[in-house]
Length: 284
Ligand SMILES: [Zn+2]
Image 1 (cartoon, rainbow, N blue to C red):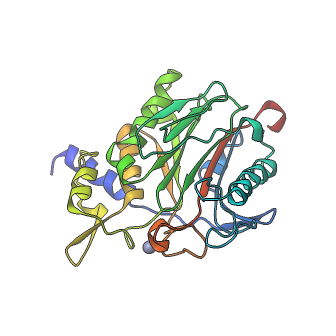
Image 2: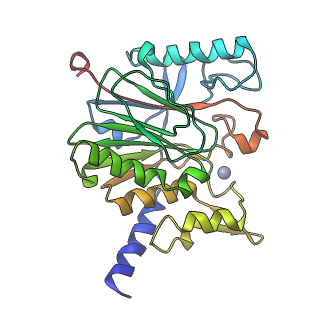
């Protein structure tokens, strides 16, 4: 085997590693934190679950999405976003929440703004906490240890097939003249290959995003491919030069008592969040 083939095989094996993230009770909510990102004291981050809050069935009980019909449901989602910001001492009025559409668009934030058709947001400015929403899709938080810039990405299969994670890593590095080796990343709870049957077309598109042999990233059951979306995003990040990726081992569909799962619920469900912000001087 050539050295290049060997190193690509090593990257694929590395991308498949998953870690235990404990559930943490915090102010009535149940949250998850990446052990890797927790090492960086100037970064605030959290992954929410469906536990906590008072959102009504079937989006019980800590829904952050405004997608659900009805003024009460939308007001409740806003209240939950406020609660989340208050817990982490973040300015809710400046919260950046992109309108996600499964694109590869990542915005660089320097002012409070509306973000149509955007699936990632990045900033180095502590005034702008960033929140994206999920129900099976893959949440990714990237942090540049040198420039202290952060990016939050929403990667479903379409975003993953479009290479949004590697795009975000390259963007985060290039805007501030940094290098991708300065970036660490966390991949939060998402649907696992245990629960994610797809078409052959989806499998083929995912495989085009990496030059490594990604056959180990596909689980086959009854001739149906079940891709490991978390691992595809981790592999993209490693290939882009990101130094370390901490991948949560929890499957949102297997654990639909803890997480919102689009697949498990038949689409009728709420949204959990991935939140990140740079700490201001007073918080450090
Ligand atoms: Zn599962």
